[in-house]
Length: 350
Image (cartoon, rainbow, N blue to C red; front, side):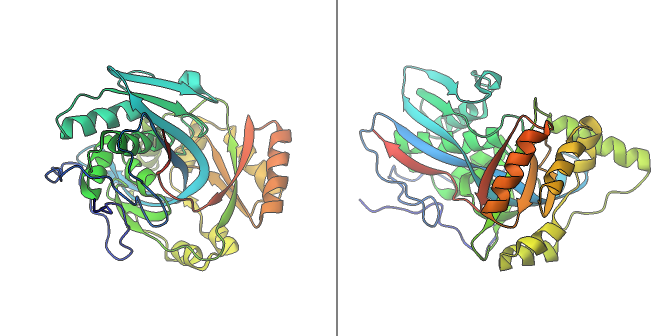
């Protein structure tokens, strides 16, 4: 059987994914070989289960434009996938079933509102089958923490179900489903580093030099609602009487990524949602300050929060920052991770 490669990245052409785009006609069922450069997706004919590892993300730049006619905001969103992972296992079942284990598992919905469930349903509908699958989510990405944990689960479930059912979905079909599920889901599938424009779902892969970047993520108690943070952003802009400019990626930040320079990246980090997140959760300012005091080159709220991201110059300093944050009393815990990380990939079948 000839393998196809639906997720091999094109480093020169943006991945154009419109939420209203009709998926391409299904191809004959095949077993995909590669998700992206370096990621394997092997044949699983007859497998009883498929397990996918999928990373969290950090936004090193999140430039937010004004409200669009569809209610979304235009974004210039620079994503980095980071080495904190959820693990999604898909197994045959008589119906659709969701289970979850790990930190904050009790906060994960186990019905059809779960993004992983919605991904399975969307793929099943595309190929005219029932979404008969048991999806188990082994959770390690913070829940409602601004690190795209739910989006990661959706991408992981989509890849796992595609392999389990042997649908042979193309890159365009997968990314179209991802874009319908949420703005962060396409990046959760491809990983690495990318600039997201439009709603954040039109991706252009970005080069990252050096040996990558070292991070500490301070996990707060509770979560922050992404819609609530965007609403606060809009309220604050209206109260200030300012016109929100069109979002644009920072040339300095893109150069810092390309050069692998943590000091230059620290100087260019930005998040337009951070003032809104701090307005809703003022205690995050103390967490940001504790990280800087412990040696972080820079610190910012990750996405819509409340997780905060602290950039370290090296692994030793990252460990020291994590220990200081844990002892500071300003967060629930702190985790170290490196970036960029590989996107969703199959790690086992049985």
